Length: 506
Image (cartoon, rainbow, N blue to C red; front, side, top):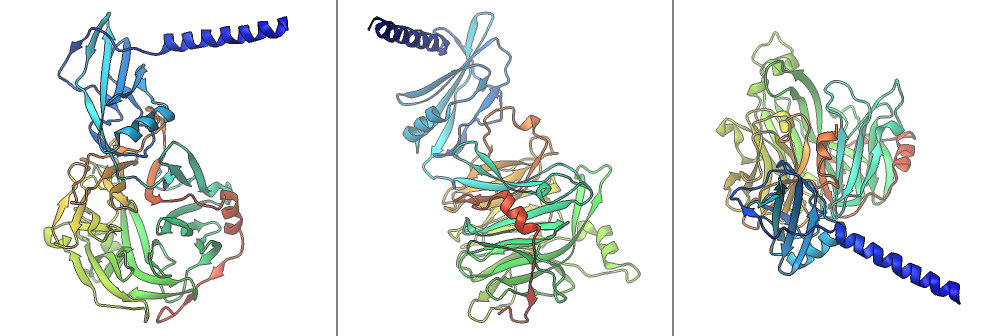
């Protein structure tokens, strides 16, 4: 009994000491401080951003020089007080604060101390939107290599926390002397039981998941320009549109746009996974067609289109395109589609960028059918390398269009996607250092007003300066991919299914 009594008391004593230590380590707000009328310097910049009510904690580093730091995040009677230069709320505390502040503003106050003198910077806010964001996203991670590559992966991330998993890694099938490129992941209706991605070079093919069953497709036919390249799942009907492309690269020695990726030849095709056949949608040698996308009702196909005719008969078309690359500009077109007959209507111009002397690419229609989101630049269709490229919205009801000024930057914005509720966009931007693309999130109101964009939150505020990969082709998802990377690798290394050509696609 004596031993048991002593054990209980020692346990209580240690617990009490632990509580005292925790209390001593918990920072407190300074009682006296000087108020200054300037915002603190933060990285990443999360000042006055609109965030979803289910996003992971926003972590940042205070860049102002000081010996001590205290930060308070608060709404009403709820608050988080943190000490240190790096502000990293716990997931539990953050979620509790978001839950009470949904639809309201979280106030952020930064206090710094130098030579025992405290000062308080001008407070800023997080506006916590009651509009949720899809729980998952996926993207390709790629080194900033221009000619060759080694390790590539397609990853998925849980936006409500920092969990990240590999969907597929090219090194699972590649070897030292046989490299494999992977790209162009896509999903039907934000779900993963119908999805795809391409594998090129070694063990090349399209890994296609149809109603939960995965196969490796060979989409090359004698009647199409190439295998499928840029995909778009029809949200209603069991078909997938692809652009088929032959692309090339040229490199600038002085221009700030380091690389020029050119669409040298391209068409639009339609793939029917039930019949395992493809058919040409557009097959005009004087037009370039790229980046298809369906309307939410599945009956209208949008895409970028540029008209190009040779001037110099002594040159190969490809050589002339390289020389005249700044002349190639894309409009956004659409065609109606009849799911009963598989027939397409005539092309209709939705956004005539060429009349503005510009080039529009990567059209994406919001799931509520209201807005068209696209990238607008001076020329070409691979705006990911173009510093002049910005995101624009067009109201499909009125035809009015406008730049997303609050979300854009002086550097390249491109590769964007809509959340399933049409209230958030996810896009890649080179605004941090012009070399690496990072993912940014912005809110779009029902009236089409954008918010200031914020970078994808990471557990450490110093994650991005130390991360030597670019994020490429971000896509929203409502669930994670169900196949493991090794299951995909086994399919990639296995037998392929040859796709057939049909004149009518049926």
